[in-house]
Each structure stands twice: as structure tokens, then as C-alpha cells.
View 1 (tube, one colour):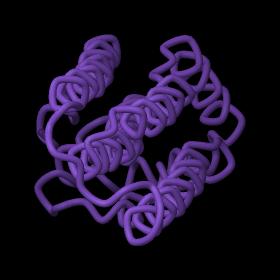
View 2 (cartoon, rainbow, N blue to C red):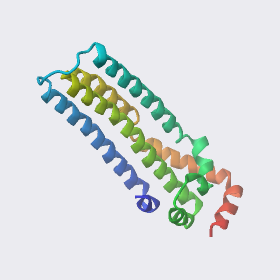
View 3 (cartoon, rainbow, N blue to C red):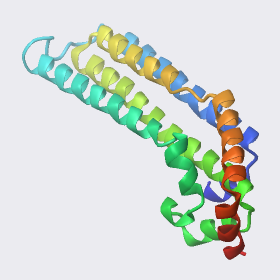
View 4 (cartoon, rainbow, N blue to C red):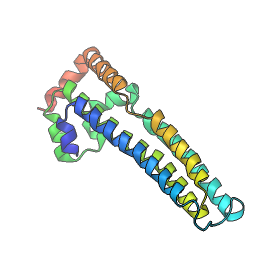
Length: 196
């Protein structure tokens, strides 16, 4: 996938992101359907006691995941992302992936790295949101109460909608990157020449 991201047009990358995001929303619906279908089977621990402790613990983990999602989303901020684009070593890329990016001029290299950041962070953030729905499914299967899936599923959907792929914001970020290159042309050109 890294090789594909190094050469993929950003328009196609955004379409891929939207498909992945849509699939994750669909999976939350599947979890809700499963919880609803098994609602009448034998109930496990009730809302009090050990069952209540599990609900509270997974609720706390879900809140922690939301905080982590916000922190990961902040990695896409311009002031953190753009200077790193000029330093390929800061990305932890495999040597062959770094070499492929070095073949691109700095502006095009930046577009590819911005796309990679959105794909990687997007998938990680959405996986965390989906994990909240999985917690709800687990609790519904244990307790036989689909309302738990409803609560955790609603939180999961809210997170997925909050962190949805935004093509307009992505395009605006690329425009800001191009302006950043223009403003830092003297600093960009030497590093570009070194990579050839």
C-alpha cells in the first residue's frame, strides 16, 4: 500500500478513504443488527455488580480512545506536518519508499506525504471509533441487552462522523502546502537538490 500511496493521485486517495470510512459505518450497523437479533437469548450479568463494572470500564476506555483520536487528528495540523515533509527521515519510511519519494520534486512529494498522513491517521482514528461499537456488541452479547450496543454504537457513529474524510479540507491543505513551498523556496530548493 505504501508503494501505491507514493504514486496515487490525491483524488483517488480521497475516494479510497471515503470507501474505507463508509465500510466502517456499515460495520457499526451490522454490529447493531447482531445485538438486536440476540437480545432475547439468555442474559448474562445484569446492569449491577460485575456487569456494571465492565460497562463503566469499557465506557472509560471509549473516552480514552476519543482523546487519542483527537491527539492523532492534531498530527495533521499544518505547523506540525509541513516542516516534516521536507525531512523524509522523520516519517520512519522504509528505505525503498523514501527513495521513491525522493524522486518526486518537493511540491509533489508533499502532496503524496499529506495523502499518506490522511490515509494512515484516518484509518487508525476510524478503527478506534469502530472499537467502541465492538465494545457495545460485546456488552450486548454478555448482558443480552441491545441498549448497550445502542449507546456504544451511537458514540461510535458520532466519532466516525466527527472524524469523517473531508475532501474540501484536504484540498485546502494542499493549497496551503503549495503556498508554504513558495514562501520557503530558498530552504526547499537545496534539500530538493540534495535528493537527486
